[in-house]
Length: 190
Image (cartoon, rainbow, N blue to C red):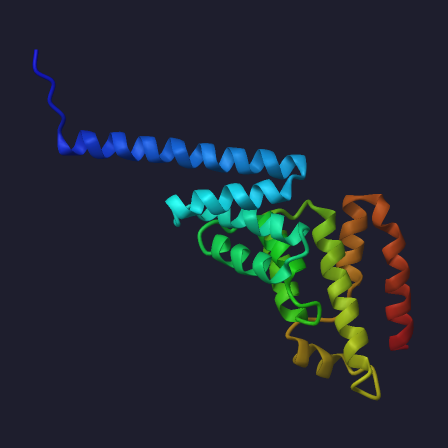
């Protein structure tokens, strides 16, 4: 009996083997991430990416691990690569955390993307509300009055944090303390 392989059959076998290896690499990295073993996530993903640089999900997992290891620059870099192929809410959220704290527009945009993917996560609304408040606070020092039109034009988004804080509270009552910031914000505008 003679066994023959077609070129298409060999390609499918190779693709299946490569896919299984990729799934195994991602699964192992996810397990390390769940355990909080960030050094292992970084080592495992780095090794996996050496053999398959197109394993984009590993970039995202490694980016999250870098964030937890307080290497924001590497986290941002890896998460940006991952997001070009896997726009997940977690990758957007962690990239927002890895950004320069005064890059209000970038943080705001990443959190808005996370919210678009999962509008039921109160943490995303809470953090976006915080960005609005911090940006407003930073720019009110620049302007002598609380001119929301000028502030919004400069920021590229509305600085009012109240809608986000209210939505975070609606999703999780534990965020109710943020409504005091809304009272303060509204008091400043009077």
